[in-house]
Length: 134
View 1 (tube, helix red, strand yellow):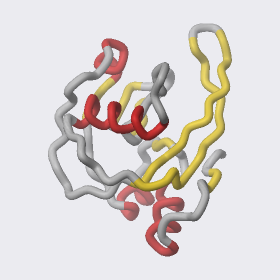
View 2 (cartoon, one colour):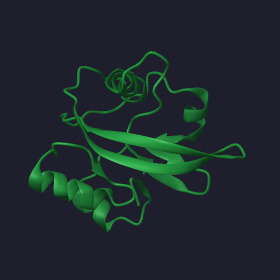
View 3 (tube, rainbow, N blue to C red):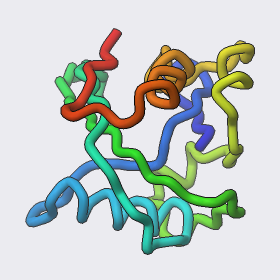
View 4 (cartoon, one colour):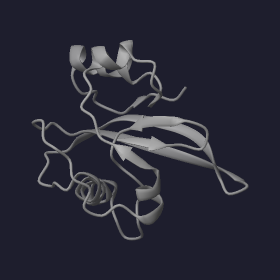
């Protein structure tokens, strides 16, 4: 998904915050349905973890993001439930190959996702999440 960030446009994977009472996988299923309009995915992982900080209002917050492997055929995503703030920032979807990401000058999260995808394609899913923090 392409979003308008605080200082630039960036590409992110679908996902979001866990709501009260949700497990990480339940939250991912909900987020995938809201952001792509689809469900029924076979979710594997987590495969990566990313630690970082972000600015929320005037406060710096720490965050730990988990990334899961969600194999799927190519389809046309149709957002079915973006929150108001997400809808204001949303610019569009695009399917990227690792080679396209590697050659691109666009901003991706996590930043070295092309390298991590290459490793994933070569070695398969890891037994425990690989730290992809920068």
